[in-house]
Image (cartoon, rainbow, N blue to C red; front, top):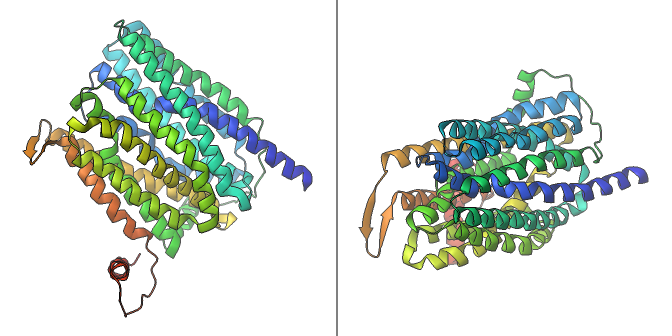
Length: 446
């Protein structure tokens, strides 16, 4: 037992190192900013700015296959090693082609195909990694541990973003943006081999295998959606991710195209965002261990409703508020949201059905983001060039997308309200608000 505990503790330390290295590359391919900057460099149309950053989630339905694999095999290390190399190593292809051919059709094609293949394997890996961490993290300190891990990985994410912004600015001034993207995508490829090598050092407890057909696995997974608390959480993530994928990917596009600010301002934005996440991640972890995920998640979503509202209401003449103030506030509440998500993944679900739970969350989120991406793409084509002046600012396509995300995020809070009987005697204003929300929740049968 003591040996097993030491192996887990050592693996958790290695996982922090692996996460830090992986996050350095994650700044380049997962935050959307550099992919969108590369898309602008290649001259891609607007709808691609929704598809590219969200494509990493579109393949989330593959989480069902990952969960089924884990249920049948009962181990994670080998498949994590292989998928980790493919998902990051493939970025050597667009890195090489952009250096050789620059803004060519072959570069565009290989870039899009590589991104899709990369994110396909990423979604497979995520379910495997989440299940692995679920077995390693100690129950009594899971919130605190994930808070510390989040702080470390966010800090290296910041370093990756600063490096990316510096390289693009430096080589752009020389008219050689392709060299900057060659370096960035090559870093992602190198990280793939390094990070996957660290997987081999981590302890992987063999879990009980299940001789179950894929059809029965799907039936078991569908049962999760019928359980009260689990159902409301799954539906919340589905709806929240769907509406967020409509507007959020266009924030950097707004900065680059409408505000006419350079990539260095994106670096400043994300630096502030990452610093606030780093500073507050541990704090959110402590709150999670003390108050639980639902309360922290509700507070975080309310804060994120406020941040997206700034992009809707504030005119571009006050761009400095959006560049400096909004990222700091957004980082604070994003840290709470992401920490809550991970905490819920490690919640007290029957270990026998943990593979099903991770699969359902991954698949449902993927479907939601796919729908949101479709909506955003259709609107970006239909309302291309839309502009109307109202009161104090021009409202464009991007404000419409931000407005949809704002309303959707606020509506998503309905899924976090417990379905309980509320007293008939309503005395105070805040009680009246709760009463109305509970009634809506009861009507929706959440």
